[in-house]
Length: 87
View 1 (tube, rainbow, N blue to C red):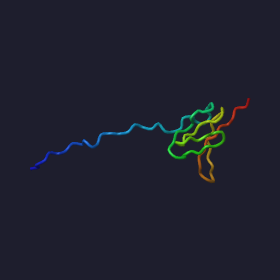
View 2 (cartoon, helix red, strand yellow):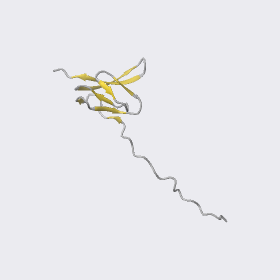
View 3 (spheres, rainbow, N blue to C red):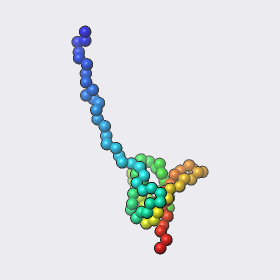
View 4 (cartoon, helix red, strand yellow):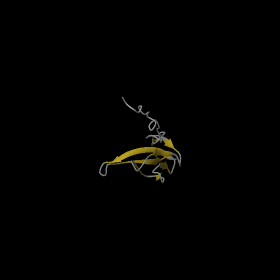
């Protein structure tokens, strides 16, 4: 017979909340300056024309226009750009 009872799972049972990462504005969306396009860890998607990058690698629009995602097949990098609206 066991002299000690089975211990519970008291060291388990916790989890952190999701970080809400990912694409916030999809291709073809119309955005204003300062709109967040992508929240990410590291540069999974790189900034293109009229797109800035924050200290946490968040990509944001620097001008009003349409969102355009593309891929550079030579370097295999995804990037997001803003196509300015014609006035």
